[in-house]
Length: 616
Image 1 (tube, one colour):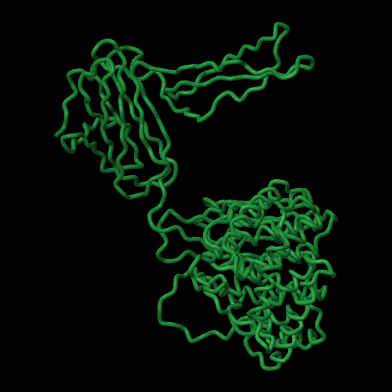
Image 2: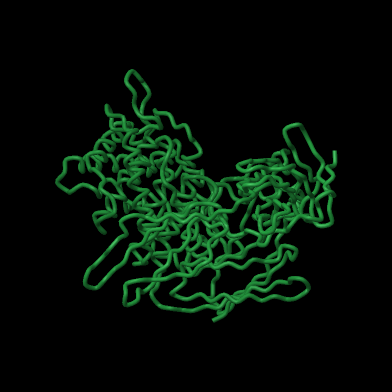
């Protein structure tokens, strides 16, 4: 029912001030004391009803550091105030309720009218009280509900319910009004309204090549037909380094390792290759370095708990008493490769991470024990997250993957260590197997990883493998990449923004790029490969799956380090698009000081085309 409020509406008093400022912390100030050692601050307190805890310290050139013995309390309070219980965000077109609570500390009983300001941003407004639903009275500027008469220390709560109809940051203003001058309160808070549906994103990446002195591209953006209206956003990002997008999304790439032995390693590995790049280019990114080091330490300490103490191998959940589960050859190779590279980083740079050689040695012995008489390796354990393996799960690819890990492990030990001879013999047997199989390889992934392995160990057959890899490369439009034959198209409808390349193609093309880096042609003949790989990076700088991101990051980091130059060659980039009937041109300047910074331009999503061109 509608509540009549006309009997007292004419007597109510509007709030003198609308409370809007609610910081979590306040007064981080630094001041110079006067000759008496005093500082006086004249500030306006925030609008929060709370008790602020105040402390201070001082520094003196003679007496040094002093800290106050006891903190002081400053209480900000009102005799009548309203409090809103709001989430961070809500969904458009979904019914939403929030609690508004009025606290009365006035000594005399007073009538209180609760109001919600009108807005074009929401509809279907009503409130819920203990005895059901009550329709709010509609006034000219607000919706109101009479709470009745509140005595001292009375608390009254109701639920405001409405349906948000607009997106973005929406102000909600609720007032507790009474007829006592200066006592009424009003509070405004911002709530974010997000679009309905599930968030999806895609990205198109382009490698700018200024070899001809000019580069220009017109980019057309198409949203899927089922896109939720108003949710579209277009952001143009650019950086002066291949790894720039990755450094801007460190929280996505440099994740703190967690989970089982498999999940832990997929978050451990990227830290290593980003550190390699930073050290090799002398980039001063202490924040990224410390984050990577901390993540590596956490990941290392967690991973060693999944070692099989009886064999030295690793599995997703480790070895448990009474269990007959075997360790995984593939996961152990992944662990050994990462631990060995991390060990080498620490040996070269110092203060990176302490990896125990004994752990690597035990794991290497397990890997060697899994080698067949013909030199191949087979998987006798269980891998739960098979998508982590990429294309290296079995056959020649698994043997090549294991040889790569053994090669990195060999660098950990001194030439006189007994394990070195065993590793060398195992590598030789594995390489001999791969060389014998090379003429019969037809799978592009097998060819790419075997070619990389033969270059890594500097085998005499690397040229034959390279020529075979080159013969199956796909080239065109300034790109070069490798992929398996496309299977017959399925009748199952695909999402419009499904990745145009599969993770296996990205992984094998990344191995090919590592081969080009070994041959010192990555920054010349390898540019079409770099262009293809960067074209398939996701919005956060990574790729589709695990191994393609790990190997892709390794390849791009190695190439970025090789082509890195200390020479400052500034470039100006112009991005033009139409907005509200006007042609807008945004200028971005890239130079040595900001090359790792990801610079962004928000483009009016209603305009689906943008022209991009850089110039010197």
